[in-house]
Length: 416
Picture 1: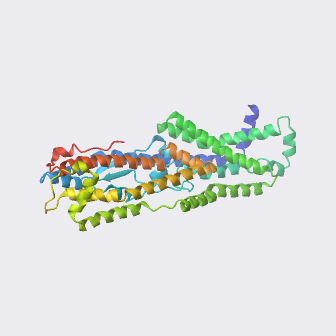
Picture 2: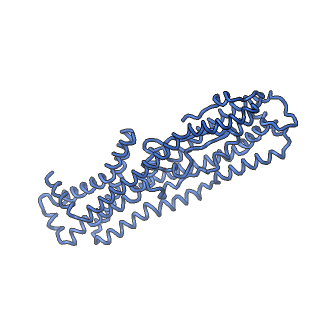
Picture 3: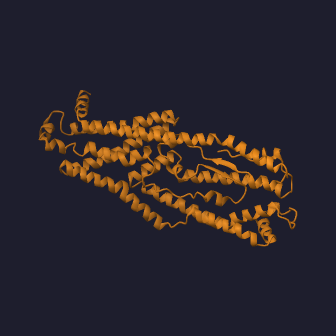
C-alpha cells in the first residue's frame, strides 16, 4: 500500500497527467449533465401532454357537439402517444435524438403518420450527440493513450529503465502497479461521475454496476493495446502516433466502412417512401367508385359489413375505409422495411463482438432503451393503440350513432 501511495504521489507531480485526468472528469460531468438535462426536457414535454390534450379535445368537442357527427370527431381528434425515457437513457441518447418520442395520431391512415418523421437505423458505429457514451467510446481511448504511451519508453529515454527493473519491487511488479493505478484513475474519472448521475436518476443498481464494468473493460482493452505497442520498444512519440492511428482506425474508419458495407448488403428504402405510397393510395381513392372501396374494406373487415349502404352524400365511413385500405396497401412494404431495419441492426450489433467501440455503444443504448429495438417497440404500442382508436370510432361511424361531449371521455387513452 505504501508503494501505491508513493506511485500516486509521483503521478500527481506530472502536470500533464493530472491535467488529462481532470479534463476527462470534466468532460464526463459535462456529458452526463447534458444527457440528464435532455432527458429532463423530454420528461417535462411528456408531463405537459395531459393539459394540452384536454384543451385541444375541449375545442374539438365544442365543435362536434353541434352536429353529433362521429366522423368529425374521428377526423379532428388527435390522440397523443409517448415513449417515456428509461432511467439510464441519459447516458446514451441513441435514437431518442433522431426519432420522435411523442407522436399525436388520428384514427385515419396510420403509416403516413408514423413515417412522416421516418425511422431509420442509426449508425451505431458513428459518433452522435455529446453524451456519456460519446465520451467513453470516442474520447476515452485518447486519454488512455496520453497516460500509457510512454509508460516504459519514457523511463528508457530518461535512462532510468534498467535501474527500475533492478529494484527489489521493480520489474513487472512496478509496471503492474503503475498500470493498475492509471487504470483506476481513468475509471474514476469516468465511473465516479456516472455512478453519481445514475444514483440521482434512479438507475437500478445492477444496471449501474454493468455500466461500471463496461467502462473498466473498455479502458482495459485500450490499455492492453498500448502495452502491446510499448513492447515493440519504440520511442514515446512513435508509440503515441501508432496508438492514435489505431484509435482512428478502430473507432472511426473501420466502423464507418462496416456500416457502409452493411447498408450496401442490406438495401432499404426510407420510411418516407412508405408514407408517400400510403398517401398516394388514399388520394387515389377519391377517384375510385365508392362501392369498390367499401367492398374491399368489408372483405378485410366483415364485422362492419352490416352497416347501412352509402347514399349520395359524403359519409365518413367511406373516408375512414379508404384510409384503412391505404394502410393495408403498404402493409407488405412496412413489413419489409421493418425486417430490413432489424437485419441491419442485428448486423451492427454483431459487429460489436469484433469492435469494442461499436459493442459498447450498442450495449449502452440497449440498457438505456434508446436503440432501434426500443423505437420499434414504441411503434408497436402506437399500432396497438391505433387499432383501439379505430374500433372505438368505427362503432359510432358505421352504426350511425351520435357522438357528443360525453363520448369524448370514452375514447381510448394511450398508456405505456
